[in-house]
Image 1 (tube, rainbow, N blue to C red):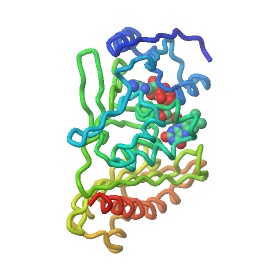
Image 2 (spheres, rainbow, N blue to C red):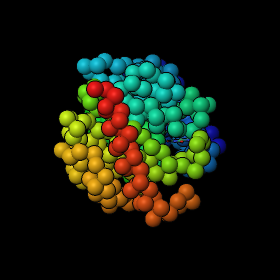
Image 3 (spheres, protein in one colour):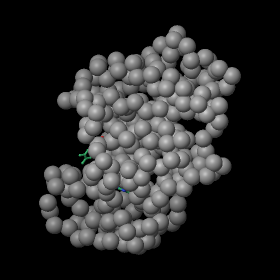
Image 4 (cartoon, helix red, strand yellow):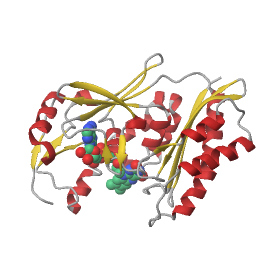
Length: 290
Ligand SMILES: Cc1cc2nc3c(=O)[nH]c(=O)nc-3n(C[C@H](O)[C@H](O)[C@H](O)COP(=O)(O)OP(=O)(O)OC[C@H]3O[C@@H](n4cnc5c(N)ncnc54)[C@H](O)[C@@H]3O)c2cc1C
């Protein structure tokens, strides 16, 4: 690994001023489970590493039934996985952390690092998108809020500038009769990257789908919202014929590649299988909240 200067700020202001001073030569460090691997392989070679782990303001989980959920960017995956409020009200997010790597990695890896690494196969991005999450981004001139649907610009690329930090992730309060679910298709049950990831959120009203959101992972350069598929389901009952049309529209939204994990054709086929499954599971979770 190439030598670098290590900085350990204890406040967001201090971290931001280091990022501003060093620009493209610096990289923020959270759990290091992506960054250190990239540094070891030479793919990323920063002159300055700005360690965020001593900044208390970036950590923690706050849930309020009226305000929703605020996740500090430096919160570990394991903390997210075990938080009772997340398991109860945002089950797709809890499921995605449980599916990520193994316990040792989840103790180090942070929810914010998963977002900022911006892998199209990242496990927590589809549920965050399906749950209507907003990224709270801190910069030297203040904070700005970017919805997850607008945050990703390509593999490894987000809307964050070099002198900005992801401070927290905000999720709206759970509406009544709403449930969510995440399905990860991978070869192994643990320590494997998704071939396809599907997250769905469903709100029911008198037997009809009042609202829904579908997010697809590992089938495009970024995680994708399947807006047209969602539109086909709104106002309809969750029936086989409708789900078939929804699955087809989700397949049309997917733009997968062929790689060592699966062919583009297999990925597209599995989107058609997993989208109806995720929607049905989300609807079952919604019924449990009634
Ligand atoms: C063995 C192994 C298995 C894995 N399995 C999975 C898996 O199944 N699913 C999956 O999705 N991922 C997996 N990963 C990838 C990784 O664990 C996750 O992406 C993790 O969430 C990254 O978080 P981190 O805190 O370690 O980020 P880091 O490695 O510290 O940072 C990642 C990137 O984000 C930037 N960054 C971090 N925090 C911030 C911030 N607050 N503001 C601005 N930029 C920031 C860093 O500069 C860096 O570019 C695996 C990794 C390993 C080593």
